[in-house]
Image: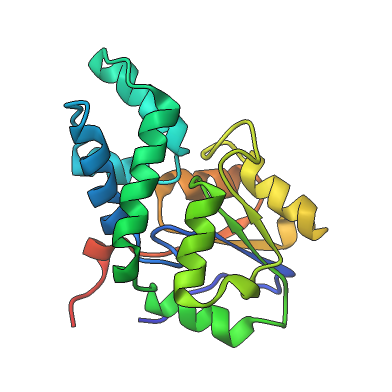
Length: 199
């Protein structure tokens, strides 16, 4: 499956990580279920995907409000990370995005812009052997307002020294696309696992 890119030219590519570069969302879903089960907290799969790109701490805080719980945010976030690292060896790339990274690496700068923690992003990219492809990583904790706010993408553009209008964003969630649009950037929608045509 080829990615359909808008007309350029672009001076930088900004990639979401989970569900965009790495097909990690099913693994994150397993990790969330294990961590939240310890607190008898439900997190339906459709809601999990709808909140794709939301920082981990924000997800836990929002679930606390939604279910009237008082889960300790830092502790649950740590447990979720631990469970993710346990299943990390199963991680696969999103083939069409990985192909694009290999084809264009070295021609223009790349950044990762993620709602996940830096440890999680680094571990995912290292598992695929592509961490060295990216000039900068913008992760949870680097910005005050997460997607759909434009701040994460604007921060990546600033770090790369590229104007927002010259950046192309690769994203798999509506929240991420909205964030890119609000940042004044063009974007490419990467299909979710269930949206991809079956072989």
